[in-house]
Each structure stands twice: as structure tokens, then as C-alpha cells.
Length: 101
Image (cartoon, rainbow, N blue to C red; front, side, top):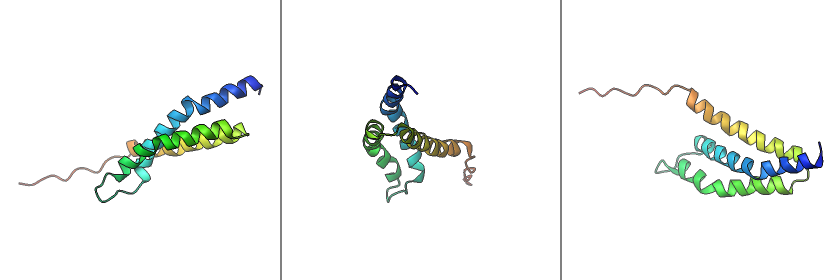
């Protein structure tokens, strides 16, 4: 791969790639984080952690010497959390209990 192509690929993983993957991680982590006492901790915590997740992905893309490792980590996180979200949408919800009067 040419140095110019490697540079643009690294820019993609550090820029829009990091933002997209951070959003997918935020959506997917609501499914594996435990619910808190109020029942909303699994929703609030990913929202608060998105900037930290983005920063981790950004600095990993900028500072890691091996571009292949950056791609494996980024695409792996995207696949895992995207799969969690897709699985959630593809499973049928149990029927709601009917209220008897």
C-alpha cells in the first residue's frame, strides 16, 4: 500500500471512523451494561462515555504504529456492537400481557 493511501486510511479511522464506531458502541453497550436501581444506568452511562470512547479510538488510530492493528480493533468493535444492535432489532418482542377487567 502506498504511503499516501496509508495516510488517508489512518485519517479515516481517526476522523469519521472513530465517530461512527463510538456511536455504534454507545448503542450496543446499552444492551450489555447492567440496569441500575432506577433502571436507566445502562442508558445514561454510554451517553456519558461516548467522548471517552471516541478519544480512545482517535488516539489509537493516530498513535499506533501498525495500521492493520488499528483496522482490526476498529472493525472488531464495530462488528461486535453492531451485531448486538442488529440482534436486538431482529428478535421478536414477547407479546404484552393483556389486561383483564
